[in-house]
Length: 307
Image (cartoon, rainbow, N blue to C red; front, side):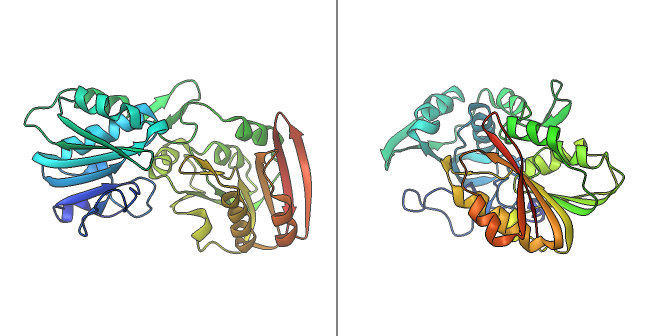
């Protein structure tokens, strides 16, 4: 992660705002948890930024948390520009910013709501919003987590099914899209697993999994699973994502499969869970010597493929 304290940035950007809708300063530091290697918005110093542009996340708790940190980091008079699709939180932006005692100028373009704010001298409600969206121990699942992480307060059904049907694996492996470390904990309960690398693109999930998976055989990698340098693995497990920017993207899961094949040694094993309708079979046949459906129930399928 970049050391934000080695310099004081003048501007920042959170997420990937469309450059055709808002101007992005050339010197802006990236502070999104979904951009591996970037700084954290939490690490920005108080009241120092001249400007920040935020592509607001869709979840209300996460969104208010991000807006509160953005306002905290702005100097009085600094400029906040925040945008979101109308159906993914955009219609709520103005009200959420006004609740922080901001005067909001609002416009719409390309199905996005775009709000502009000049940070006032006095703000209200920042501490409450930051506390609500901060890392927390979710007692129902016994895991450290944070709003905004995939399935942050429950075990998603696909992962639950894979946990129930997980075959015995051994040697060196990886969990692609490891999330909070739920699968990793189950895998590392087996002494035959020598090393397990948890690969995850969300920094918040990586930090949570470090607390959830207390095992010296675990390695943690904040990275895009499609772009790692992992190789010669005995096994890979994955519950691959299939949404990008809130839109179904079947190519994303297919890319995870192709990446897993590159990581595995000859005769290595991939075990994945996916929604039943996802068209992964052709990609698996092209990259692997054989494949077997281990389960097909409750709208999900578990597939084992051997290289």
